Length: 74
Image 1 (cartoon, rainbow, N blue to C red):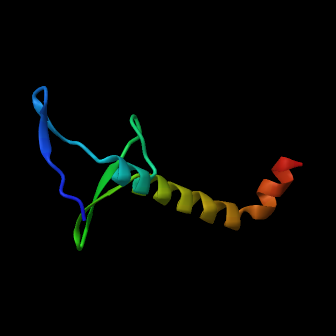
Image 2: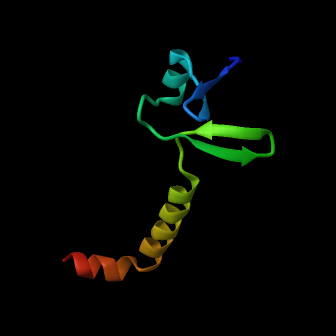
């Protein structure tokens, strides 16, 4: 586990993430992280839960209307 220090950035407060943590998250400068509340606390993740919900809906529609989409593609 890493200890992270809060630091002042202008009128805001930020957290500096060490390089090893950035590598494990597979993110770099300019990438977006999401703070997701879980039963175990707050989780920082590059995974966008809203996008995942939208993709689940799209996959359900593609499964239901598979034949129609196939005809449209022809």
